[in-house]
Length: 191
Image (cartoon, rainbow, N blue to C red; front, top):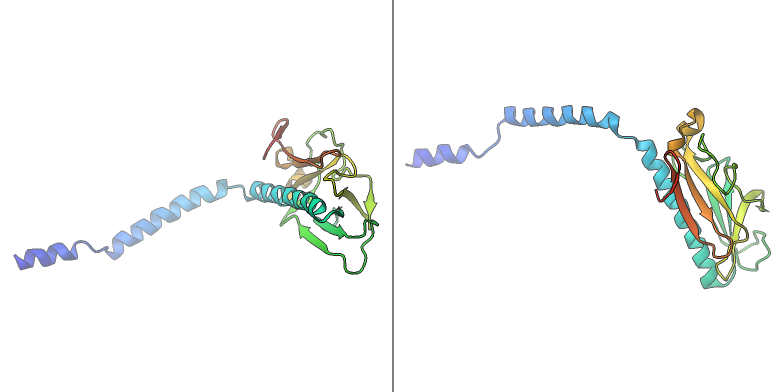
């Protein structure tokens, strides 16, 4: 009886051959699935979420601190600059906080072959220039300085015209509200 229990106890272990078979199956499945994952689309969505949250935070900060917050869009470096303008003069003065947020790897401002939406055909449609960058200002009542928007896409889409990797952040003037859009075969809300 003890011999039977010993053999039964040893049988609960995993042999090296069984382990190698499982690792091989996982490797084959990963080899099939990984080429089908489009990391670029996720990067563009992440950049859009980041930019949208930066705009929302800037608007909220303007309301809570009761002074202007200027958000500039640097297409050359694919960054968003947030300037907390404590004296509301539109200039970066000593002691005023300035934060820059990059869009992310291989993500740029651009339209990439998608048809223009109501904000216009430019990657950044704001006409006001602040410190050399197109910018929108959020005022202490939550409103924005002008209506406009920002297109976000991947470098790959910008080079090849893949419109389905283009996203849009539209900002309303009166409320400062930011609406997110994505392009599939037409513009649709959300991402």
